[in-house]
Length: 466
Image 1: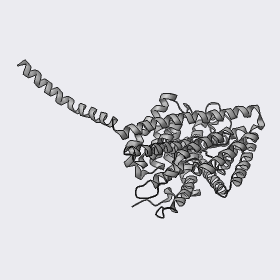
Image 2 (image 1 turned 120 degrees about the horizontal axis):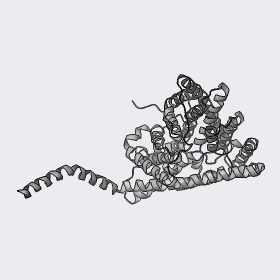
Image 3 (image 1 turned 180 degrees about the vertical axis):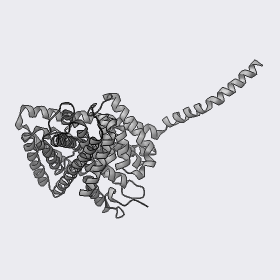
Image 4 (image 1 turned 90 degrees about the horizontal axis):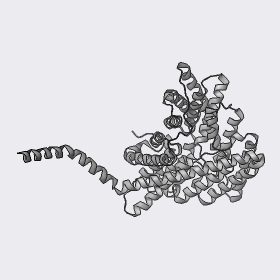
């Protein structure tokens, strides 16, 4: 009798535990899935590469800052030489490594559609492109040019995912090319800013919403693994730090609108200036012309740096000074950094625009505060960051989520959203063509010569399907 009762209880417990056992079996089978293992391994490799690249980038930036403090004339030697070297390296060995890299990733995603025969990713996301991108940007920052590392990091991460995916396909592991490119770009942004939410939003907003339903698992897994790897090595950190942003009510909403207008105008103007610089760059067809253009730009950059050392580098330390040390905003610094970014865009050097744009936005917010004597300066600096980045990228959701994660102040989300939407509206009103839609259009037009079915209209300007 007791034995029968025990058997019945055992059957009952087995029945109760079966769903748990089935779930465990499913998880273990997924962990053993070759594609999942390959994705996790690629994300870890990419995260370590991002950490190493970031460390080198800021090392060279700090070395230049130290040298400039010792010898004020240093920039007149280093800046032209490094800008010429970085430009020649890209022009000669990998022209697709020029600029920040966001447009290359977006076009590679579009051109990897199975319905289109041309694979732009073979050119835009190769190992060689990644290597040249890293070296060129490091050489460039070693000379104090006004550049950031985050755009190149997105491009390099996409290169890693695409190239490793190609190797895995030769081993008969099923890889979705588009999913891996999108996951790589998003993981690169997440690693650059320690901002996983911004990585996800960037993938949706910039790399194509119509792909999201097919790539969401790969996207989330890549961002999760890459982000955890970076945090395991670097520890939990904020790019800016824990900033005190106080939202005081109605007048902060009015200020958010004002900063959105100001930042929208500045970001749009900067984008147009950089477009003109790229058009001038494209006229350089020979090695001599490339070197002359980079040399002249380098000398102009050196003059700016000598006149105002705050012009050089990414500007991340300048941002921190605004938030934590009540640094005074200087109109010449604002104009100088705009001109510095334009000068770099006039060359073939690899150069990111994320942090320089955020720094410019911080300057705009601080300057706006000083003009109108608004006491809530830290909030307006953050709103300026959102506004200028929105106007440059035409990606308001990515902009305010990114700044939100950089500052860890969710209380300011509504003013940030207002500034982002106002800046987006102003940018669209002033100039329908953003910097990135312009560079995307050039790339699409180039590949159209290989495949007439490719639409040369920039992605963001194409009509939505009905």
